[in-house]
Length: 182
Image (tube, rainbow, N blue to C red):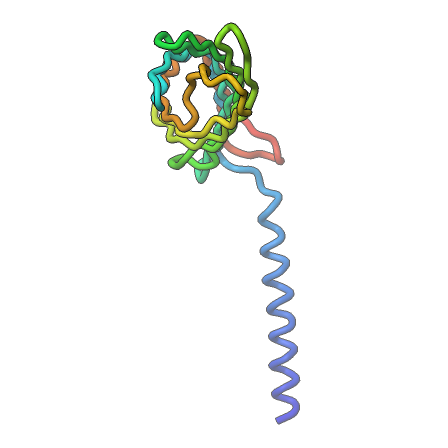
């Protein structure tokens, strides 16, 4: 009985050691297929909150695509204008899309002026990007000023159309000695 118990414990110990060795051996393998895409171009959009606002700017998107997952990053800079209340704004932002299908998460550094006074703030944004369309919603955190003539959106939703002027694609297939080959 003691002999069978010792033999069983020895097999469990060696089996667990073998499983651990196999699990750690798979982490250093390179993916079979990998594609990197970089796109740069202008975007045009409309923002709707309390007011309609026209948006225009430029964005640079880079994405890493593998068989199992794709991660996209984007930086953008642009301006917007409220024609009704004469408010000009500048935005600089970043967002990330951590999966192939899913939401985008980001933030914007914002500047608004009515040509008499200015405000600087931030805006966390959540959105959905499909093809060239990017739908975002967020909230502009701006400091309160005594003047109440500052008519700008706080809570907003925007739809942007991104047009790519420049596209760069790198493809990598296969693996040989830890190096990719085409």
